[in-house]
Image (cartoon, rainbow, N blue to C red; front, side):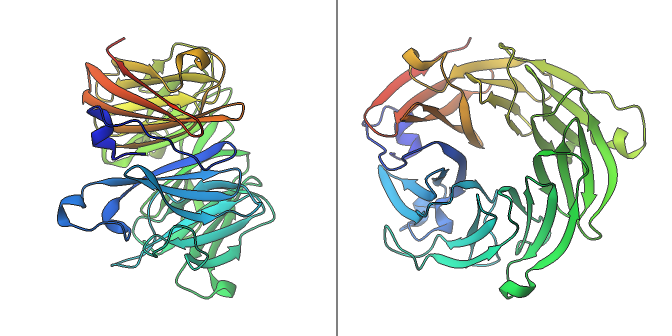
Length: 360
């Protein structure tokens, strides 16, 4: 993978070999938080981290895979949304299929190494599917497994004493997001808010029947966004706190009758994607107006598979798609939020396809 900005301006074609099965999670982190940055001019660049069902995590930057973490048999389901820790020493957390949580250093040197694993501890017998760094305590990690158990971990403590909080939600969870001491959990058809200081429910932020498939939040504007069947819905958090009748502020309908399983929201845009659809769609946050749509695979595969993972950083979007034994990672950069975007699709194994997309 070449530097993202050079790709968007017509950079050379490259190949991304490595993963042997479906990409499960994508994360974009600043290059300055790894050992790869060599000059001050590079501090604004990003690296891409990809996790996979083959048990590995790969760090991509400037044309190649620069780091490989893990590589064991247990599939990696998720990675932390931020890096853990204060100061110069920061680590990435990952959640495995058999309930283990791993802490990885991004600052170690060498392409493939075991010394990057700083700690490994068991959370539960169930797969760890969601994790987030606690906002006001960057050394604390909150995780949730498929059995609805929510755990808070102090990653600075010894392994026997790391769990500092435990609770559960009543229904089957589908997603979670953390802001400061509050944890927003989408379970079945509702979004509940938990206070991590006392590990108790404090309010209900949204009720969306028959089912919620994904969740994102923007506390600065008191907004929660949920993904449903063929639509995303915006909710006012304050109405849940004041026990008003819960109704969405607005509904954003997509092209296809498929679940919205991936969401991003910031002050300017809302982005949606799904396992059963190749189309990634965007809307303006303030007006709810649809801006652009684009595909995350090559043309011949557009109606076969959907988006398996998505990450967004400012004007950059990264989406992963898997078609049989072939994996694709798509990069898009907005030129203007309401008019156009440039896109590049990389095949993880064999070749690369590049296309530019205009307004739809």
